Structures are given as C-alpha cells and as structure tokens.
Amino acid sequence: MYLQALQRDIESHSKIVSAVLKLCEHLQSDKRACNNESETDSLQLVAFNLERRWHAIWLQSLEWQCRLEEAISSGKVRKKVLNILKVKFIA
Image 1 (cartoon, rainbow, N blue to C red):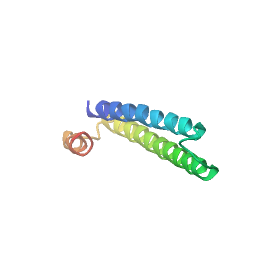
Image 2 (image 1 turned 90 degrees about the vertical axis):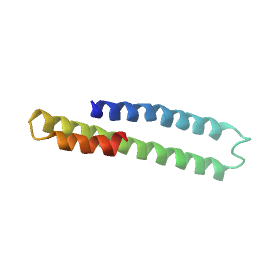
Image 3 (image 1 turned 180 degrees about the horizontal axis):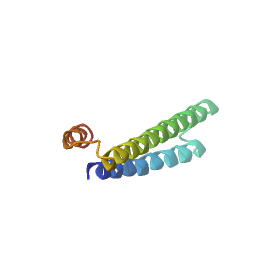
Image 4 (image 1 turned 135 degrees about the horizontal axis):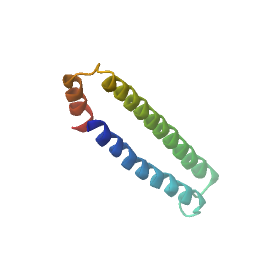
C-alpha cells in the first residue's frame, strides 16, 4: 500500500543520512579536511543538526502512519483520502 511505500522511502533515506553522518565523523578526524578547531566545530554542529532534524522527520512519519492506520481500521478513511495521500507523498 501507499503507506508502506512511503515508509520504505523514509527508511532508505535513513541509510543515506547515516552514511553522511559517518562521513562527517571521518572528516572531523582528518586534519586535511578540517584545518582548525573552528572548522571541526562547524562540521560537528552541521552533523548534529542533520541528525536531529532527520530524527524529527522519522518520528513524524511514524506518527502519521499510526494515525492513518487507526483511521483505516476504524473505517473513517475513504478511498478519496487515500488517493490524495498517493498524489502528495508518492508522486
């Protein structure tokens, strides 16, 4: 279903975000990449903010998924609403 496709997309992006965070860690320890403490601190802040933002997106997606599953199981969601979700999130 569309919710599952959306969740798979988010999970695949999680792998990309994780790879970027590992690269940031590697760059922080590389003296050629970060010439001074200011550059290292800046890179650390960027990595921290990326991780924090991605975690918030991931949590919000789980919340949406739970709400939609509850609505579907209770019969409150019609086919039209699912079609709207399809257009907004899958297209």
